Image (tube, rainbow, N blue to C red):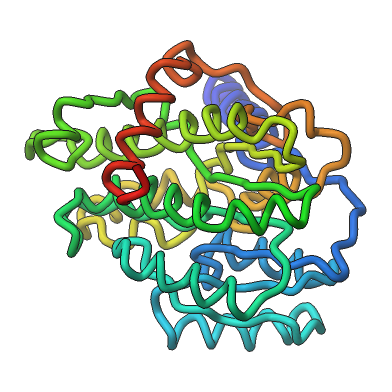
Length: 318
């Protein structure tokens, strides 16, 4: 019996340690208010995005929810206004799977809004398939749509400097790679239906986020615009809503014990958006509200530059 109790105590102790290190995570300590500032949050109608939008609205920002679903976004607007007491929260239609929609959003925003102080590229999908432009879905939504959006809004960000771009990536970028031959031939990060293929494509897209941020920081030097990529943690959001029922059942015990809620998951986003004096860290990757050194492949100047050029070509910017 004593051995059983000892094993139980050790298990509980291990869980508490893992919870403190990996689940609870660090908190954004910035007291910065953003009255008079305008923020765009892509995918701001759910999960980390909505939690981020609520916090920024509480701090006084004008918050633009850039989302695909009108119905869900308008419901989120009402909820955020109620939660924050700030009625400067609006919805603008944006479908990151459509380059035409990205351009339309940017055109509408630039006509209707005088400022842009924070661009939070939060939206993402975990879903195989193709877009209307013939692009692999996760490449298009997780990287290319945000790449085009950021470029179309850069002049407004520069005009409102100091301003910031925050790109949500993932620890999964460590398993990613960029296959330029596959991109040029198939408009895809990789192809195949092998076991784990969807996760590997997701990882590739998250590596794109880190490399995009790395190159963007170099191009923004001296402009007053800074940028950061980040891992929010493993979060209870709707990212995996398109996964199979079997996958959801098998992973439910893990997510119940070890996965962060959206409030905890939004802390590193808020840190990168608000924390004072992190401008010298532009281009870096953050986790748990602190910069973290990435592997050489995630800070490779040549690969980052080539990804930028390929992305320009796909978007028609070149």
